[in-house]
Length: 154
Image 1 (tube, rainbow, N blue to C red):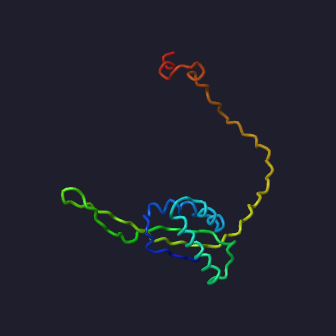
Image 2: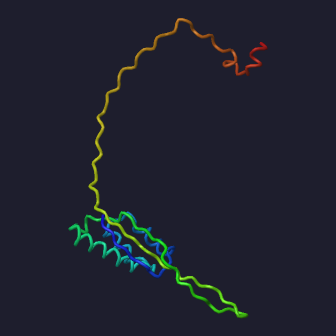
Image 3: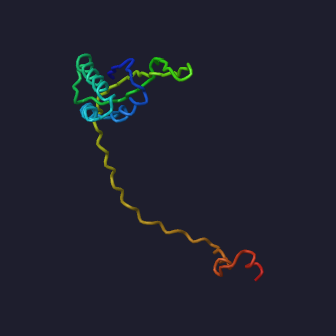
């Protein structure tokens, strides 16, 4: 498994997660196309992170980019920068500028296993049921459509 990290990216984790959900579980080629075409601001830094992870895989693990897929991508909170905005009557309101830590994990694509074809089993001839010695008496309420209480009265 190959990892790459993007630390203290100055965008809120909530906004970055919108883009990461698009590429999670996709192959590297599909993810690059999605990141190129998305209109979200987090698309370009995440593409740069993905290219870095691919370079790590080629250099460190000697893997081909065609064999890689995004196994996991997590977005965590990073330090928050706090600022103040002056307001009326000498007050101030706080502004929190959120940032994110992004961790990307790549893994090789597992070869698809062929489904084993089950052998067809021939149906056996039905076994004749043995008749019981005593036959049950038919229920009078079942045939007449009456309830139990009404059947007892008759």
